[in-house]
Length: 245
Length: 245
DNA sequence: CTCCTTAAGAGTCATCCTGACTATAAAGGT
DNA sequence: ACCTTTATAGTCAGGATGACTCTTAAGGAG
Image (cartoon, rainbow over all chains, first blue to last red; front, side, top):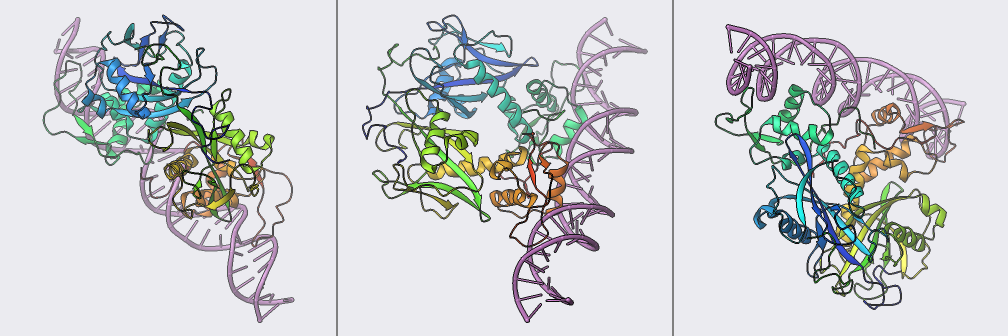
């Protein structure tokens, strides 16, 4: 069988049309908790339920472009801000009955954002809010599954990439970076060991000149760092206890 | 915006229908080389070019079911054999112009098969063949990209999962397992160190009772092993030289 | 039959990385 | 003045790894 032939010969409309959507698992760390951006659905099915933001891919868009467009619409972030965000394709969800209305294939993305702005309630959603991970009830469609997959994926990528800096503002302390790991993994890490690991990995972070940040927090003021150029972590920074599949 | 509303209100047919296909990067290790299952396209576009096997997702199928069905059709493997194969969703390719005929979104899968049967030339493809990785010319559509992504993904997963056993027959020697790593990574590994790592990782492999395999090869006969129950490798078995992104 | 080649398998050793831990410095709160 | 909190420096033992050496057991060439 050739790769792209329709079931009944070549005719673009000889088969059931699929709708293609994107769904976004937008994660952030706020006040030492992992938060997810959710929208409240305004219509059936699942009216009143929380769902991941997302929407249809337009005729001339790639899925990633659609994801960035939807993200800007939902969060009120500027287009240039959204353009720089870490956005990664997670997986595509294709179960025939995942949407009761019609056949919808959804390309899911994960986005990591630093210290997030409060989303505008506007747009087309009834409301869009940052919800602490796990405190939402059941989400619409298969979005529970998507969100769980996103969490697992992000947790795994923290191990062997420098992705954690995507949760941080441009300049951050090592304490804030450690907080990202602790929050996503749900564990406590040893401060000195974490520091040693980050600082001895070439290109993970780079020190920022100037005085320590004058923060309102307690304790000794911390030095500031920027994300370094590296993307991969060798050797990785493994989760304690070994990672169960 | 609610998650699944059509651009112009709710009407399943109010937007351009997308075709949804699956493409398969089926990899195997044969004669110390990585091979890919490719089909020769019988019609335009790209008639005469090699392409990844694949095809349209049928109305009541998930993408994974479609992938298994196509794989059975292309390779002539029995349904039960295909059911047990390692099949993993790789990524979805959605560039608007990736297929010149129409808007086609393709969900790509990676499959790993042990010592492969020669595919039947039958089916609908002009021919289906195992081709040594890299010796094919340019593939049709964006299949070069898909294949490269599959290679990279498999190489990465060998590091931190027990996936390598999916390339091996039910009973295999440590030399065969090492050959998988060497072939996919394109490096040579130290025999004793590889052996130590595999044997000290709980659940990676389990020894098979009985005499060593009477093989036609030279050298001391090797003991046989089966895949153990473990799926993750902790700590991972990292590629030499550090992995560039 | 004997030597050579090949690969399996056992073992050594130094180095690097990590986890656990102690200690000091510098801020805010009471 | 203390106490709490956090950053930062440093130590130390054990595990994992990379680079080796050595022995064992097969096939092939002469």
